[in-house]
Length: 291
Image (cartoon, rainbow, N blue to C red):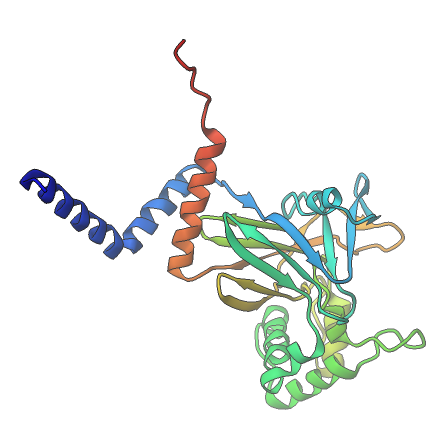
């Protein structure tokens, strides 16, 4: 090996190590590139649903209805934004067997799941407590005290919201999320949850006589998300009017709640790289070949 080639090899190795050590800086540069391109995002690709589900599509202006499940209808239902959805996918029904919606964002796998009772009760009711206390903070500006929390938890698990028509508890109403879109951008993954623009009645049922829930209060269903090795339960208390509802069911799917999952820095870097790669491939123009 000649001296020049040997020195060049060493220099290349040093550059590679420098790039490796400065991954956070590279991530910042990649994300800055993505942000500079504007509000640019890519939808989840290769969606696969396992389990019972319902596809809600646009039946008429301002109206959603059940449509046959197919690759085309699923893809169509997952397009759009909070203010202009293309429909939604309902995962499972009322806390039944788990249904999953899987795909990838710029090559990174993501799975969205419905919930079962054990999700709520695990860790001494950790999720149920978190959800109820977050709802209280959103509605009243303060968490419930210990005694009131016990009362609310009891209602969450045992209140019959449909007397005479089969037992249905509040936890079941928020365990079958309706996914209206899944988009990746430079800051993570945004997920749209279709629901009620006004969830006052639902929240009042949980707190009962403890307090009066302010009119117009909002609360979404809950989705379990696994993304790049991370798992979390996502929900929100601030909705955007969707402009849609279900015929003969005023208010259903009238709001969209956008929730966010922000991955670890390394995954965020990979997402940024993937987004930039997709952006470049979509914008690349054909090059004329010399004759």
